Image (cartoon, rainbow, N blue to C red):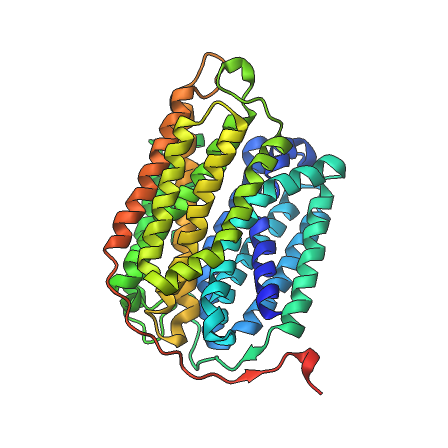
Length: 465
């Protein structure tokens, strides 16, 4: 039961990333603002999630993972309810930021699974929860499109509120409280510096296409963010109890896994951006497939299910061949899916095949990464380390969003629509990123054996006398 609750919680958190995409074009009218301003309804969630994941992981290491999971679920309830009650931009941004903060649920849940599951089930459980990052984003589009089409747009957030409330109850009453808290303090200065650096860098990347890559604002945010992140790294190395132990993360198995996370995160997001646009392009272009938003989402939904199907397969591969080889296989399958898409662009059902192949690769690769991380960090740093790995995946998805948008606008028809060549270029770049992940994975040294420290488990509240 705890595994089910954690996986459903991860799914509910990940759904928030794409749930407003179907109504993005209507947000200026719905919220009484401009398109530039309402674009932040999506961006602020991604930024909050990027900052929250490593911080939530560190809090989990210090305070206990079950407590942080419950807090994340409660934040998701509040954030979703604020959005559901919003009629203007400001409260909507507050609610969406809170939904992003709740994404810390996923890395903390992954790190907890190693402690509460029997060894024979740990790999499968971690693989299943890792897949929720992709599954939530994949099924969020058609589900949200259907809800928004059949009901008032506020229903999207009321559904999210109800789901989050159920998850909160499940965490409190079904997930055991493991006595895994370690004495220490929160490095709040490090958290602030990390937040400023990440937000600056990611704003620059995410707004580059709107502002222009050579615009002073773009360069200022990107360069400024990198400078602050360098200062953050210098500050962290001088701390006895850093937010993230950079010496541990600099070890080759962890470092190369995190770099591979950027490449695979890029590959996952690229298909989520490019394929729906190709599906929805008018048939009059000669290469567009003329699907509605809902139809395009439904064509993409099986890919999300494919990620979940391949979670146990990934676990078997990890047991048989090791997490390193499994990561390389996942990245290779992801790249192969893009090559298939390059040659199968003329029908929706063919893109469905390509989407399922790429999604299978994501499912395999995403499951292997936390295993590699957890096998190479001390138990007391598990939450922060998995949170940092999730952050690296988020950086990959943000880069993909900006670069795919730039590629799609680099070659346009007279009416301003992307050309067939632009879509082909996107598929080639997606394949290149995935195969780069294969090469990076090949450099990961053999994992050392990691014997988990003994922990004491307190039964959930529902089983106590």
